[in-house]
Length: 245
Image (cartoon, rainbow, N blue to C red; front, side):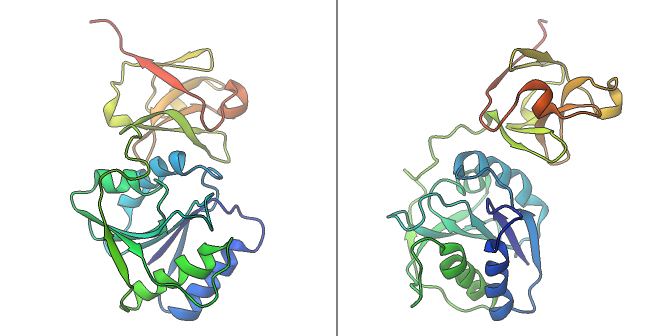
């Protein structure tokens, strides 16, 4: 399957134009809309989301990953193969956390150059055609890249910041819940929050943190909008402290 992970938003023609390319060239392959509202122009925040969500998809999935503020610049277009999944997108760090957490991975710089390549929409003109070529079993010319000093390699394994707010106002962080003790208190935006298992475990209007269904630490308010209530946005930092022994 194709899995779309972009910051295009739900408005406008961009997602539809990419899907048209996929359906024209690989009509039998299903298309899954994972994120259309990943943090805009923000490969760093998006990298932690992608790494948390990709593991739920089959091994042969092809991720069309277009968070590309440097489109048209000298940044390279790449294919990442990681634990049987393939990711097509820009070499700006958005794929780094996926590669870092994979048991086996390989980067390749895309050398294929379509005849009609706009300067500002590589998602439609380059990445979507390459994804379709991969799905159809057609070779894509690449040059192997080192996984060493690449964009994103200096980012932390877990990011103590808000990386996404969903439509309910729940604020996902770049921290994996497995890395934080349940007795930890999270300090964010001048507030101190204790953990809960789920929303109904706290009173209406109560703010708390929990490990969400995809393994990320998330800030929430039962029956309310945590982003508005606590003044959170993508990039808001946090820290956590464990209870004294």
